[in-house]
Length: 147
Image (cartoon, rainbow, N blue to C red; front, side, top):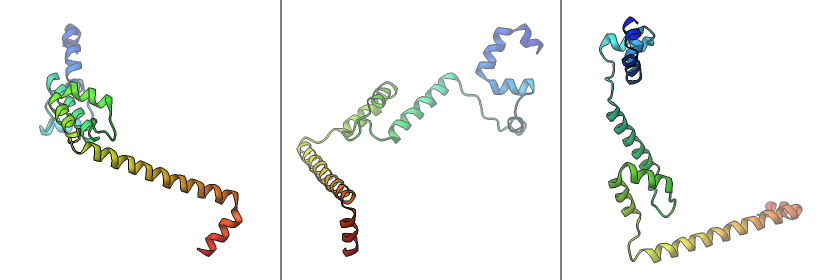
């Protein structure tokens, strides 16, 4: 404590860089940290550069795990921009993977349009059936008993 009082600037720097060490030195560390220090299994402190690199890799991994942000199905501009900034090589790879092949584009668009049309028709039919059942409850109950 005397050293901290006499060297305030260095004390603050050390506290911000390694709060676990400071808590061990001033006696406020939790029991698990004290036990790790006694056993010699206390994890080494990462440098600010190592911490930043680990955080960057974690963010890139989270973006990749969420899916390809460049895909036509679910484009995510925020993730695209973050990925471009954090890891341009990975961004280029994912961008390339999301591009359709030259002869595939028209097929993919046609299939997607057909799927949307079919889904809309089914939803429209179901909605009409629900409206009819609500408007004519006796007829709907009779049809259920028959079918």
